[in-house]
Length: 397
Ligand SMILES: Nc1ncnc2c1ncn2[C@@H]1O[C@H](COP(=O)(O)OP(=O)(O)OP(=O)(O)O)[C@@H](O)[C@H]1O
Ligand SMILES: [Mg+2]
Image (cartoon, rainbow, N blue to C red; front, side, top):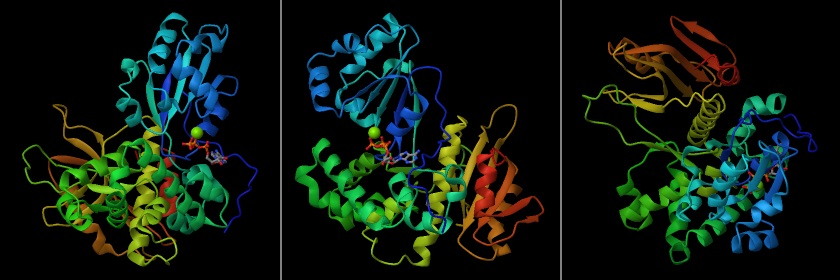
């Protein structure tokens, strides 16, 4: 395993837009560090600073005076903006009257929306930052370590005690959410839910079953999942529907944003992961890399999974072009396997999909943990690292 240089700062792939933006992302993914990297000379306000927080929440108009006489186009960074949602009205005003550009950083839009904040009505882009990707870690990327422990900066920069770091991470997140979401009276059910949500990572979610297992009403399960997805800790991967005529669709799959955090939520930090767990963790990691590429390239294509009528599955479908009068939908299909050897029977679902008349499969990938690349007709089989390299180079979509 390649040791990380603890002093080094890793360059992120996310680029800073030319105009105002929101930056969201789970706790500890490096948002504040990135803002410092890309806007080093910006005027900066960190609302974690208690006295600044008090001053600006009492009187949001102070923001203008505190910023001084900045020229038009100057950048102002507001970190932890969710702490004072009312500041957004002032930001809006200053964007118009002074033409300042704002970088507004927070852990999620949920807290802003709940504060009744005006999200600037489309005047600002929304960016998301997640844990490191293989391309950011470059030579420091260790597949086995990342599958087992995830790619949060805290974990990757100090590889000695990932279990302790992840336990503390989930604990901090929980305390914060429980306080901010007013969950105090529902702590035991929320904790039961979290463990179950950890176990169902990468699976099609049946809310009814989870409600039964966690002994809470179905509506509570839905609201708990909404907390996870709104705070960007989890994502629902919808089932792809080949056409509007198809009525029967599978449930969406739930994925944690990071395999290490999923493991911590499940309470499995002290147990060696089994093969099934590792297989799901690999899918979780690949999904993370696909999401980040989709985000930083600003392609923003719909991502889903596919369950064939026969019940076989394809892990990821990226719709590179919507169906239109000009032609059928275009797709990239990706099947991920934790396996040292590629088994050609895994190709069936991919080939069945490609044979369907109403879609155009542009590219098909088999991604596995073996050492060699293969070309079987129009199916490309790649070792994980090679696939991720192609992905971040824009060769996949
Ligand atoms: N690009 C990077 N290179 C090296 N270390 C990083 C990088 N980004 C973040 N870190 C480390 O990860 C930790 C968390 O980073 P940071 O505080 O920037 O995250 P954040 O997303 O702002 O977290 P929060 O949501 O809690 O505000 C810090 O210890 C930081 O030093
Ligand atoms: Mg921060």
